[in-house]
Image (cartoon, rainbow, N blue to C red; front, top):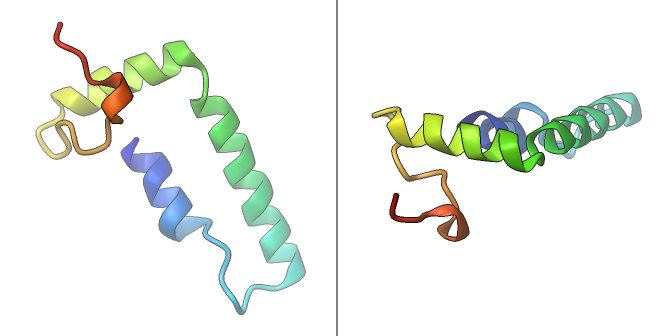
Length: 69
């Protein structure tokens, strides 16, 4: 999912110069988001929304979730 990918790769990605507190906050935030996004019903809804959005189309849908419907 685009927003989760953005968070994982930049917004809450742990940086070398992060303090221990910052690392902890980022890790917990990312863990929480991954937990919320892991629900199969949520995944299906987000896959459909992402596919319909012309900015993203199928770029963020995993091969396992691509089906002919």
